[in-house]
Image (tube, rainbow, N blue to C red):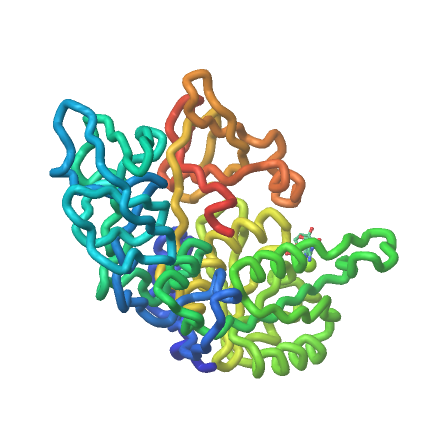
Length: 417
Ligand code: AMP
Ligand code: MG
């Protein structure tokens, strides 16, 4: 389990740009090494741990793309209809068992293997039958409607590389290569907990001054979507011995411990002391808004990620900081989502030197281009603003003033799920 190098989260420095933080993490966080074989039905979202090489051509045989008639192109007249006897029938899964002969046509169906020699297929809709013969109009191209063997995948080519987070089409392609199982990284074991005297389990009575635990459930959902094996440690009491004991036990059986809130230096915040006593803890004053300091540390060989308490800050720092770390630990090759250039549908002022994420939904401008419309409420505790947004506009460190109509980078939530 000790996939973390010694004190890999140590960082000296003041306000740290987000990219610098991610670069330094990328070089220091080492992926878990365990692998397992999974059946294709369970492979979705898993991290591939092998390169997948095609053992044969896909499709394995040349075949017809349509229902119609297979012919030799050179038997067709250039500018008059051609009449050819239909002397055979070949359906998908039922090869003709012989090569094509000059001067004949063969009835063929989509996916049926092309008998050797035939190079062209006429669509049945374009032909007329005449007794045992077919009348073929002129004008077809040589090779039309014939799919070549290996046109999808060539034997010997690498179709998927280790580190790939498997998508539905990947699973389909692996199946087309005859694979029943794939070697994937074992799931990352992540334990999640909350602390805070005001934080209550959903469904429990809500005393005055209390709120329900939103963060833990948003985090557990985010982790499940990433393919992590999640353990729910619930809400830990504000007592150092209790927090320390729970973290020590959890550390032994997990790769990552993750929490939100309670990381400030208040007298009732015991998480910091508990993690420090089990290993080390570092506050990263990330230059990011929303999202106050993020704490990264380790308890033995187990990574600790402490996110801010405000629910929007939790989600933004999870997406931009925790997620790349987790993907890296999982062994994923690509940790960074794509951002897309859209038009700003709002004006905005910000401080230089920090990156800001603005919740926005996308609408179509008059010219059809997507335009980001800022959510009217931007408090770090307004979780409903996330629900009502499609993603985040990322405003770079050096920007201080945004005018409507300017191009901005947009991170759709769908990119980071
Ligand atoms: P803290 O960082 O603990 O001071 O928390 C900052 C804000 O986030 C406070 O308003 C907390 O009540 C709130 N908060 C902390 N933990 C949670 C949680 N698990 N669910 C919802 N809100 C929380
Ligand atoms: Mg608190």
